[in-house]
Amino acid sequence: MEHIIRYGIIGAGMMGIEHLRNLQAIEGVVVTAIADPSEASREAARRQGTDGGGPIECFESHVALLESGLCDVIVISTPNMTHAAILDDVLATSLPVLVEKPLCTTLADSQRIVNSANERDAIVWVGLEYRYMPPIARLIREVHSGAVGRVRMVAMREHRFPFLTKVDDWNRFNENSGGTLVEKCCHFFDLMNCITRFNPVSVYASGAQDVNHLGERYGGRVPDILDNALVVVNYEDGCRASLDLCMFAEGSANQEEISVVGDLGKAEAFLPSGEFRLGTRSGGRSSVESIVVKDERVGYEGFHHGSSYLEHLDFLSALRSGDAPGVTVESGMLAVAMGIAAQRSIEQGRVIEMDEVLSDPLA
Image (tube, rainbow, N blue to C red; front, side, top):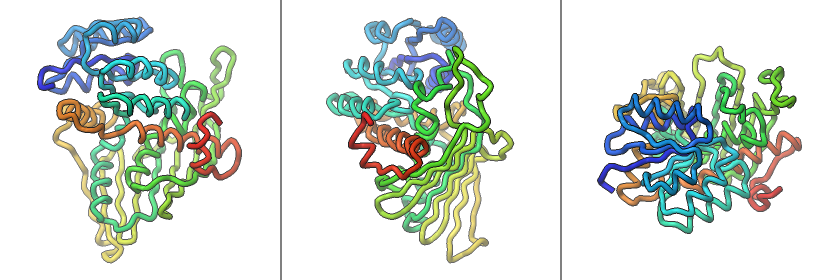
């Protein structure tokens, strides 16, 4: 696949246009087609295609795009609740695909997609791009190299703005998004798994909808998405991870803060400052070194500090080499399962064992 690779994007909302802009900044690829049922979204894609220098064929239906013969690769960036049905259609073809997070909104759908993906040759890649944010990628490399010793505690904080407005306000309801801890936090659960390299055993969470969207009405319904939560995850080797999420914390210097502490030291990453810190127990506070991490390969920063661009570079490399996906459907499914466990823990007020969730996907 050393020729120009033709991409089709299914879903031309905010993330679809974000993928389009990233791909327009990468040599050797071209976006030839976009599918979206919204005329406004299709028109936005047409304008971006014109600005980016290449015409884009726009379809109302993703099926029409798949049947057009215009694409070598598919990117799915539609609302969460549509992923499963669209993936069923894409996986029935021989086209490689990158699907935005979360893989699906339910575990039953996620498990079905994993089975389908493993029965085909073309790769399926899940868009969990937080792994690619430069300071976080540096943190992962340092931790895996042994810089902090045996990992004992991982702490993640996201203090940010409320959910953005999306087409038809689909992200205001759990039934569409999978819930805040699936929709937003699958990124962080995936990072916990990536950093620790162990399987999660149990999840306990506390959370609520205390501030955001309470005055909004959609068809007479009040949004039901959480806007804050604390989550603790226990891992099979005894280490623990925590997530502190607040979505009414606009007055924060950094939106994401990640800390990994081992028996030898501590590593931290901060965004959007891009700072990475590393210190040792033996050296104490004076040993802490701090740098701002940049990745010179980034050709488009976009919404995610260049991580989507870097993810697309790796995805493209795998397409050309035939390598396995860098972020597997199994990783995507496990991140969804952890979010479901956290949502269930809040609803039921108890610790949720991961075996309970994974063994009964319809519960």
